[in-house]
Image (cartoon, rainbow, N blue to C red; front, side, top):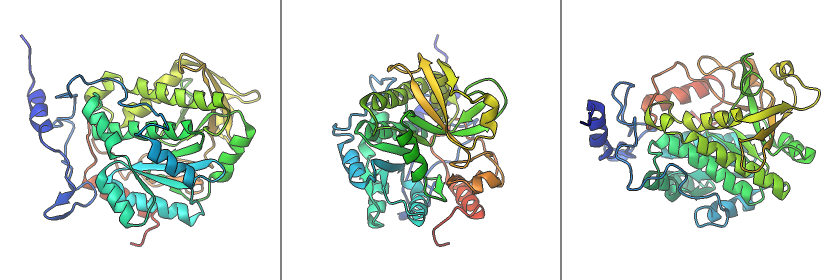
Length: 379
């Protein structure tokens, strides 16, 4: 006898309806207003339920820069690139104000080699009306819903962001993948061009909080939401950077994460779990203790089963590049003085098994950005 829980029945009932709206009472919804407010105990998005017919557990398309999926994005990136570097930001309509803020911050520090990748048609239309450089990625995001088991929106959006960055890198460009909540307070280009000139690093991520535990990167966890891919290097470097990106995404698709927890973080944890499959060797002259007070990029050689291309030369970027040492509460001085910063959340809410963020999430986010002097748009 097959047992069916109340929540499984609820999942089928709600999945048949649209859980997301962009028009509320005849007007454009405020960010998050058209999304349901849900809790951990009453959330239908705990499974791929129902799944698309013959749903796959992998990616709906490859990051081929010449494919119909990514050729428009790559063309825009090549037009925007300066010294083979482009900044890529991807988001949906709920994030429209935050994306405008991201673009205003970039313009404020003199960064113009940017591409905005719209994850729904409403976002694409909105950015175009603002005169901002948008590429429509709606069909690419919908492919996750239509073909894969990655049904929750925030997970699919995170996966598509990383896949799109891989396509740009595969085209021969260096790309810094950023979230719209990453605010530029200075121009990161000199740091990234220096990495390219040094020649070794194939992927770089900011060094995160150091816990002292001998796991991951010698006790310091990277922030996988902000990733630099070396696409403009040698063919071998480009291949290794893209292969590591894809392998990490595959690890993040583990059904355990898709069923019941972790919001968008199954993708980020895929990168972390993938690294755990590698042997990890710090560059000569550096110890784990040096990472705690890191003042320059540090190289870590990854080898073994974490990539299909023989490993990776990975750079850890110092807190002066990006610092997010707290998730909740007031921003710390290190974050305020970094080239890129991000506002912490005011408090922790129950975000497990979430499909989309609601209006309260966005209101709290914008309020925190304003309080931490990361809001560049007129109030």
